[in-house]
Image 1 (cartoon, rainbow, N blue to C red):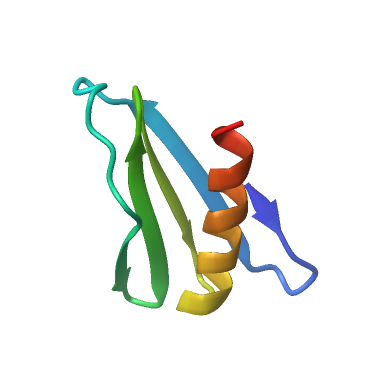
Image 2 (image 1 turned 120 degrees about the vertical axis):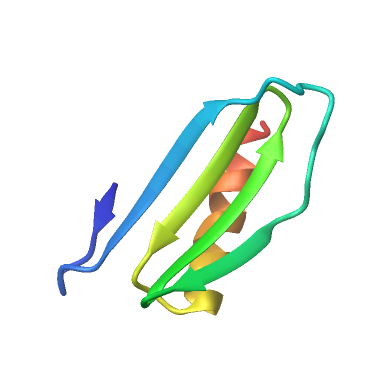
Length: 70
């Protein structure tokens, strides 16, 4: 979890994916002001969520993706 000075939080969730052969591109959803990008990478499924706009969250999601695929 990250919280900025204004108190807005971004959370990264990761859980085991039973279908380790499957990868997906980023998918986006939004509900009640919370934006979520989620994707599958190998054996894990990731979800990045926060009360931020889509473009800001996409930048964070791309950064997370680059760091986990090293």
